[in-house]
Amino acid sequence: MRDVKLLDYLLGFLLVGIGLAPLPQVGFPLDNLVVAALVALGLLRNPQHRLGRYELLVPLCLVALFYLGVHSMFAVASPGAADWQTRLLRFMAISLLVLVVGTGRIDGRSLVYGVATTLLLNVPLFYAGIVPSPYGSYLTGLVGDKNVAGLAYAVIGLLVMLYVRSTPWRVTWGLVFAACLWLTGSRTSITAFGAAIVWALLAPRLPVIGRWVLGVVTVVTVDLLSEDYSRIGVFSNREGSDQLRARIDAASEVKVQDAGFWGKGLGEAFVDLQDRTWFFHNSYWTALVEGGWPWLVVVVGVTVLIIVRPFTKIATARQFFIQGVGVAILICAWRLGEVFMTTYWAIAMGVALQQLLANQQPREGEVEMSSPEARRGGGVSA
Image (cartoon, rainbow, N blue to C red; front, side, top):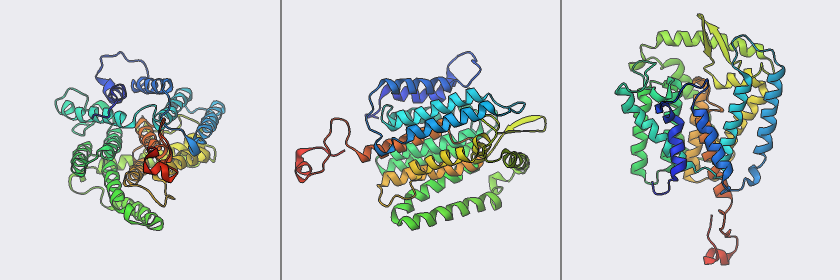
């Protein structure tokens, strides 16, 4: 913990832990305030890394968000749709969070450790009955939703393993977060976590084409598990919830097909069923309904190119582990509802970008080792 920046750590803690504070209801999730504070803090600091060849991310984000805003402004909102302006502001804040973490204005390690601390504290608080349990015995607590809990423990657990330096501690923390995932009961998150570990172990030993094959095998395996082995053992009592999910998916698919190429605008990724409103359980469909194919291509494309990096020929062990985090996110997005443009997605994106920028250039005040003289001691490598 000696490398942790206290303020960044505390704000990471509050991203989930703000639910412990006795604050009044303000009509929107309180973690939005923490995201805003992180962005504001980051913008007040000097960047530790230049975007370099990734500076095209800035205009791409601006164009994509402008498109979403204009499209949503002129779209005819469905009854019960979420407010598109609030959602657009959230997306803007999430995009800025990726950039301030990516450029080192917010320290990724400290942020991840802060969130991880709250998630681990959430476990005893949950079983002590101090925090809510809306899904019965399934671990939720401060996170609130079972699917979000699965996403949080999977992504943050993998990022903690990324930052831990020794193998014994990496294995230890992997087992701890795997146990937490099991307590959430999220089959998709458990599968995604396992797939990420397999990727981190096997991908470094494979050429690029081998990694593509591994990716295909992962997709086929996850699909097989979800179809044929999703209700065995402790999950044998999920038939009723799975039938409801299937009905939600069927209604969602109809709305996706009706959305057309451009989508229906922000806030439209929901269906009405059994006198209740249900959000989509598929983040790809959410993107298609809200922003059409242009938005889906941007958000998935940026995720793949920044985190998964399928065309990279040479990478470090840490970069392969980050690729595993990307694999987990893509799997979670398939069945866990909203995954893209969430806080946990932004943290993973920011950490991945921070690692890329740190490897492509020397840090501020350091000299790039481009000459034999520098490599012999005339400078310090980034």
